[in-house]
Image: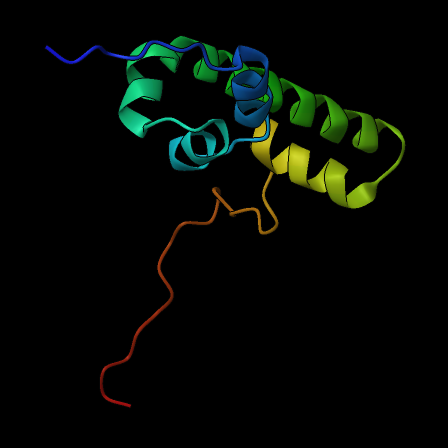
Length: 102
């Protein structure tokens, strides 16, 4: 029976790659393993890394908005506050007159 080689992968590297939202394929290629092995053994670590990456990005966007970046303020307003570019007139919902003879 052939011996199965056991080796440890660099968990810190896997976490850092997940933080910048590398795909499973990209992470597997960098650390020298298969996608299946990552999904089986490191799924939670990768999800944690991606979560940390999202938090960092959200923090950076929020700080930009607070520093006066108007584009970021508008974008965050649309994402978080349901603000829109073209507000709908909800009081006047009558259809426009339509004359089919013209």
